[in-house]
Length: 114
Length: 109
Image (cartoon, rainbow over all chains, first blue to last red; front, top):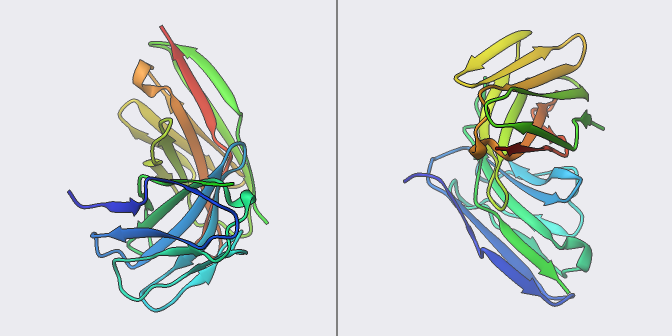
């Protein structure tokens, strides 16, 4: 079944460590997104990519970096994790065209930074 | 910045109707989405409005008034499986989605 996969499902990480969250989609969508979801704050956009080879900053980009080497993969890297980055991370993708351009979400990664 | 408000929690009885309101103030407007999110799961798309009026899709309907910065999601004939969080999201002038904090709906027997 086509869709978005994320790995790992969950992770406990020591502060200061580097961590990469993986996201892969097989829908050939042009646009991909990373959000974090925190209780009471809703989903907030971290970084996005409108097409392979391009990336942009969202609402809360500090402490995170992304790359988009190809259409399918959009990894999110925490260079030096801090406890405030404890959250649930969702990757999403969309066709990137005009009109509805619905975003479809992956299952999420629950990250705890101690 | 974007400002999207929706109630935190709502409770309703199985078989009843519940209306979840969403008000927004954004920089530009390119559509409003409603997503459903069950606990521990990913958000899933429910509806999209870009023009004023009502969009009906089975038991769920969504309404938009652009001049008032207002939308609602109407859930009819509530079922236990409708217990979830409902997220209002607005696509702004830069085509980025901004989400409200979500409304947790609890359906009681």
